[in-house]
Image 1 (cartoon, rainbow, N blue to C red):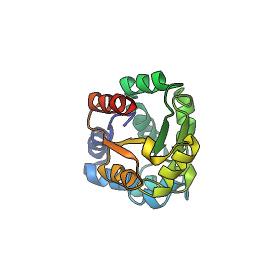
Image 2 (cartoon, helix red, strand yellow; image 1 turned 90 degrees about the vertical axis):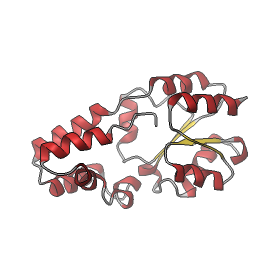
Image 3 (tube, one colour; image 1 turned 90 degrees about the horizontal axis):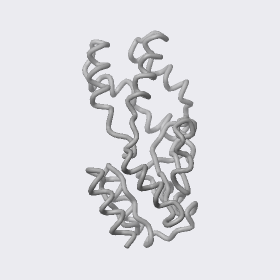
Length: 186
């Protein structure tokens, strides 16, 4: 959500380059990652070796792929600006289903100070919609569920947070998400 959905365009481009469907490309990159790299059971380098084998891609192609995917991730400037404005006024956290190297990428992008807490599935060992990831964020923020708003672009992740007592919002656009956050804070 803080970065746009770049995967459909990347899958189309890389599928065409590799002579496979976009769906086959996504399956090669992400298939099984929920049980492996997404919760830190497998390192990113090991996972990329698995992806390379699935795609029958040599080191050069794999390096190009990784570089291209990284370049396609663009921060939503309006949401980043909102989170920066909230620092010191409201406690915020990033809760992300993210591969183990994500914290380093956040540091490289200058985003580690964007929120009060960052809970990444690759470090925590569990991913949304597992209740433990929401509870970890609440603990790090010293917040009770009834005083927290969870925003995500996956309805099931929002429903899981709501089941724990958090308010929820399904992100469909930057403008509606900003309006919802501002209304919650009032």
